[in-house]
Length: 197
Length: 412
Ligand SMILES: Nc1ncnc2c1ncn2[C@@H]1O[C@H](COP(=O)(O)OP(=O)(O)OP(=O)(O)O)[C@@H](O)[C@H]1O
Ligand SMILES: [Mg+2]
Ligand SMILES: [Zn+2]
Image (cartoon, rainbow over all chains, first blue to last red):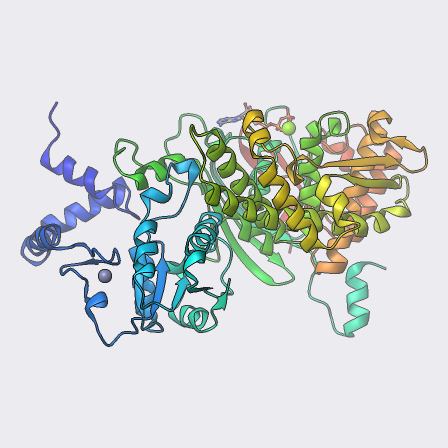
C-alpha cells in the first residue's frame, strides 16, 4: 500500500536528531496548522538550502558560497588552522568567539568498527593544505573520545614530516565530552590554553 | 570507631551523612516491572517474596546506576519488559555526601533502521543498544560519569562460583572494587577496550593494515591500559591492608594480581611500562592478527585470592567459606571507600543470607549497621533478616509489585 503524504513527512522528520515518531507527528500537525507562518517559509527555506548550501571545497564547512565566508575572510589569521570533526564543532567554536583562524572539517573520526578509514575523512586534503605553506600551527580540536584521540594521533603522525607545529585543545572536558556540548567560556579557555602534543 | 565518627572528631562539626542512599526509585518496563515508584528512607532494605517475584530484578535495576554492565550482565534490550515497545528506564534520587543527585538511565530508543545509506546511519545502527544517562536533568557524556556520583557493589548467587570459574569474572569483580575508589577507572577501562576492539577489527581487514592508524590505536591502548593496571594495583595494596586483620568471623584474605602490566608496574616507572607495552603491541601485530585477538594486556589479568588462616586458594575452600571471603572483601572495600572517598557505597546483596550460618549472618548485619550502608538484601524468607539491628525497610515483592510491610518502612 502506498504511503500517504502525511506518513511520509512524519517518517522523514522522525529521522532528525532529537526527534522520534511522536515528536515528528506533533511537528507535522503544528506545521499544517501554521501554514502561512511556518509551513510555506520552511518549504522555501529547505528548497533554497538544498540548492545553494554546499561543502566548502577548502575546509568542508557548509555555506552558500565557495570558498565559505570563513575561508574568504581575509581578516582572519591565515596561519592558524583548527581541525574539527564536524561542522557542528566548527559552529560551536565560532559561537565561542575565541578563535580567529581558519578551520578544517574532517567529516568524522577514524573508526574501524564503523568502517570509517582515513580515505573517508578529509585527511589527505588537510595534509596537502598544510604542505601548500602559510600555516604555522595546526590545532587539533577533535573530541576527547577514543576515536577523537586516535584520529588526532594519526593526523599528528601524518603531519610530522612537514614540521608544522601541532597543538591540542587543553581542556577540563570530561572524557567522551563533545565540543558541541561545551559552553562558550569553557571552549574559549580550552583554545587559549592549547598545548603541544 | 566508624568512618563517620572519625570524620566528626576531625572536623568537630556534625558530619554530613557519608552514606549513599536511594530515596526515590522509579522503574519503567524493567523486566517483570511495568511501572514502579518507591519512596525510601536511608535505612537498609530487605526484599522478600517467592521465586520469580522480581527481587533480583530490582537489584539489577539499581545496578544500572553505576557504569558498565548490570549485575546480570544482560544485553540491554533483553531487560525491557517482554511485549513492550517502549525501552526500559530506571530513575533514582540519591542522597549522599555531596548532596542530592537525580539519575536517570535506560536503553536508548531504537533508531530508524531503514536508512542504510549514510555512514552516520551505520554508526547509529551499531549503537542501537546503547545506554543513555542523565544526571541532574542533563544528558551525561556516557555511563562512565555515573561513577562520580554513585558508588555501589554487589554480590549475587552466580558469584558463589567466582573462585572456581575463569579469570573474566574475577577481573570484573576486581574492576568494580577499583571503581569504588577511583571513579575514573570506568572510563579508562572503556577506552582501553574500545581501542583494542578497533585494533582487532583493523588487523582483520584484508590487505595491508594502515600502520599509522594501528600505531595511533596502540598508543591509546598503552596509555589507558597502564592507567587501568595502575589503578588495580593501587586498590589492591590498600585493600590488602584493610583485609589483613580479618573481620570477626569473616576470614582474612590474601590478594594478588596476575597480569603483565600489573607485574611490570611493581618494578618499573609507569612511563616505561607504557612504552614497553606499546612497543609490544606493535611487534605483536601479526601474532594478534592470527589469533583474532590481543594476546596480552590488562584485559587478561586475574585476581588471586587466598584464605589467609588456612593457607588455601579460595577455590579450594568450602562454599560458605568462599562466600565469607567475598563478603570480607566487599566489606573491606566499602570501609575503604568511606574512609578515602567519604562515601559509603550502596550494597546490593542478592540472596546473601543463603549459605551463611546464624553467626555469620549476625556478623554481617552488625558490620552493615556499623558501616551505615543502605544495603539492599533479598531472600525468599523474611525471617532470616529478623535479627537485623536498627531500622530496616521491609518490602515484599510479588509479580512485579512492591508493598512495604512494616509501617516504619517510610519513616525518614
Ligand atoms: N524481559 C523480561 N520481561 C518480563 N519478565 C521478565 C523479563 N526478564 C525476566 N522476567 C521475569 O521476571 C521475574 C522476576 O525475576 P527475578 O530474577 O527478579 O526473580 P526473583 O524474585 O529474584 O526470584 P528468585 O527467588 O527465584 O531468585 C521472573 O519471573 C522472570 O521470568
Ligand atoms: Mg533472584
Ligand atoms: Zn571554507
